[in-house]
Image 1 (tube, rainbow, N blue to C red):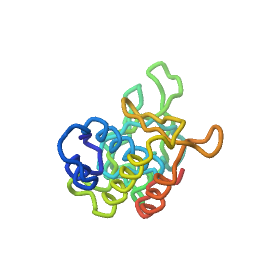
Image 2: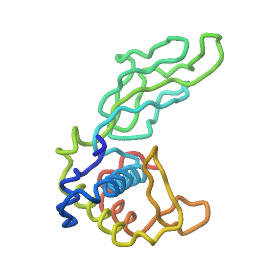
Image 3: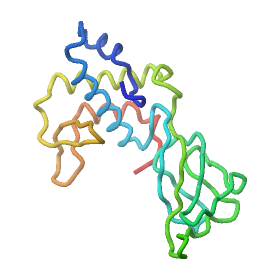
Length: 194
């Protein structure tokens, strides 16, 4: 089980009525890929984890890619400049607001660059703490994708995980009614509007 999966392997096996461990590798990949894809589409994370992003300065706000933001570990630039924690606040668990403004970041050679923001985001501290409604939708999506594995022609991958399904339009991120249904059902967990 990946540390960010919204359901455990035991929950997945029980939900699907699988006895034994023969399907564990494929089932694990499906659970992980669906968790990541649904999170990506919602702009959120179910299980809290640390992220690193790069953002320009020069404004009052930094809009991070995932929400809810739990904490910010650091905001630094390559030259070693740091934005101190008392200079900004987390607003609505969705963005950072500086008391003045986030100045432009620079390299040690004086070239403009981005701030490196390290932060933690997510709704639940662990997989065990994930709410039953999130678990139910992920398990429903797993069951749907498992029942119709030939439904897709395209593939989306995250790291060594991948999930295959079809898209409606050329160039669009592929989708299925199963994933669409899970995203719609979990709209209350939407983090960042993309």
